[in-house]
Image 1 (cartoon, one colour):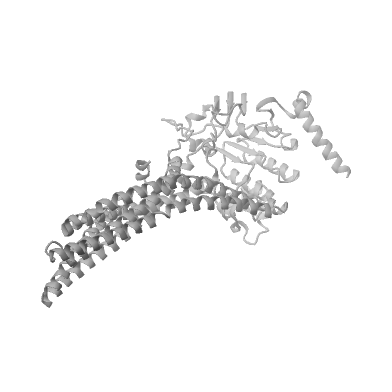
Image 2: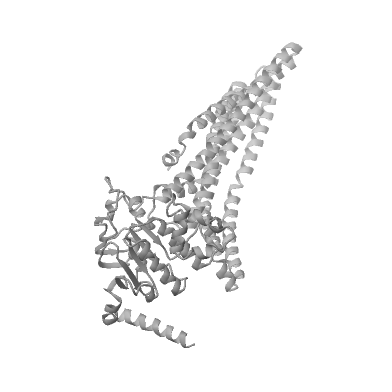
Length: 582
């Protein structure tokens, strides 16, 4: 895990190294100051002259300034290194997520990924900052102070031999007790963020059913659960301060009592006031160093779980492999399914798609209908390798999809999914997702074919109209038409419409389909629909049932031999007749 995270330091190795150098300089200067101060106290007691005092004072001032400079520079380089490290972590995680297949994404909820890229990275960043600065400074100060304490106080420094192990053992016990609580907290953070995300996205439903109070109580319970775990963890961690204070005062009392007794009995020959003063200072430095180490230990304890969660994202192996010598062009839009079966995970008990054999010629228009859960969407998601078939093979343009460069394959396939998504930005910026080099004329033409130009022209800013996050300022039908226009700009070999005209009226639906015939006649068009009217004129219609192809044929053929198709058609025809009578 440490090796994996260390790989994200990269270009920030230099400021990291500079931080370590400056910290060493600061620690050396700070441990020299009490030594010189002790000599100054003894010189004053011995009645030294003013010139010697000024000389020693000047030396102390220079050392203090050097220490201050080293500390300031260490703070600057440390902040640069830690912030850069966090940036690289987030960038690496985001880039890794972009390589995931849907199968990989299914392992992590979107709320969990957000938590890992924000809260978890912030924890690891704080730990890294403490490691390269405080975690270096504290041990150095501890070692230098102990050495100097023995030089100055001799046997009197044996007090530290007792205090340091007691404190170290105490801090280890505190950390061991606190770790499980912190581990539970981060898992609950995922659930809390998921609740927030779900609530914000479904705000219209919440308000429509007047369930605000229920959601408040649910959120309050989740927040209270986290508060309880944090309280228990912090209650354990809080013991480190009393333990530290006890050790500090024990050390001070011991040095004052024993040191004063030795100084009086020896008449200042064995130890003098200056040495006692230095011992007290070194004692404080030693205990402060241990306290810093305890803070580092607690922070690392907290961030260890965060680091583990980050590494899970970075080390997740994409289930889609790129071939060694990928094919970089797609010949045409022909599609072949040869004995294809698919399930969403190896642990799944049943196949979502089973024993599918299907052959579609390039340029055909194929409708797909079926009841809810019949795996219509699962079938088409195998074409651009959003998932890979578990058994059998899927071919596009006569080539096994796994032999294509993934970007090339997906560039040849345009999908308009059930859940249409627009990004924050202008209408034109959203449409250029289909073709970033599209001209204004091409954008307008695609929108006319998708019947989107008519409502865009009613906006004051037309194609420069701002789209809010998620497309909340346009209707469902408008969003669908914009997404269709975006797909058309791609000029794909294969166009997949996954129930993407459900929010438009039948007249607009027919106009869109007519536009497809004229604008992209050579493109293979797969239309998943609930309305038979949307696929009635297709070259072939696939009837799906429980993950299998129940039948394939034209509208007239299926009316004659497919009970499922005939039943759906009659229900929709009857509904249309009743509506006309009304």
